[in-house]
Structures are given as structure tokens and as C-alpha cells.
Image (cartoon, rainbow, N blue to C red; front, side, top):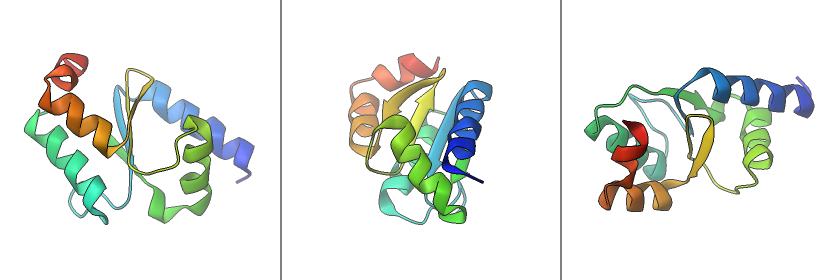
Length: 103
């Protein structure tokens, strides 16, 4: 897949999933602490979400960074909108804003 095709797939995935997390690993076995923290937060909020494991596809890993213009993984999208990475998600969770976004 070319980078352009990868970005098209990313766009489709974001449009087709209310809550989508680009992460390292999966829900049951996150492969980094930041991804694990975001999964934990989403589980605490009892929200349904889809994931894309960037470790399975190097083009996806690079493509999502370019797509969002954000250098790190994980990345959370809610209702087609980029929310942020682990620090932002944690802050939004702690101040109650994330729960509002997800409901």
C-alpha cells in the first residue's frame, strides 16, 4: 500500500468508527504504557471503541502521524475528530471533558 492509500484507509476508518484508537498492540495486550493508559481510561468510561495496531503496519504507523500532524502514538479520534495523545486524553478524563465527548 502506498502512503496515499494508507491515508485514504485511515480517513475511512476514522469516518466509519465513532471512537477509534491508533495504538501499539491491542486492547488485551497494549505494547506500550501510553497505549495501556488510554485503553484503561476508555474501559473505565465503559465506551465501545475500535483500535488499529500500528505495530502491525509500518506504513500505518507513519501514515497516522502525517494524517494527524501529531508525532506520537496513541492517537484517539472521537466522532471523526482528533482528540490527542495520552497526556491530553488523561487530562480530559481527569477534568470530565472526555466523558462528555464520548456520551
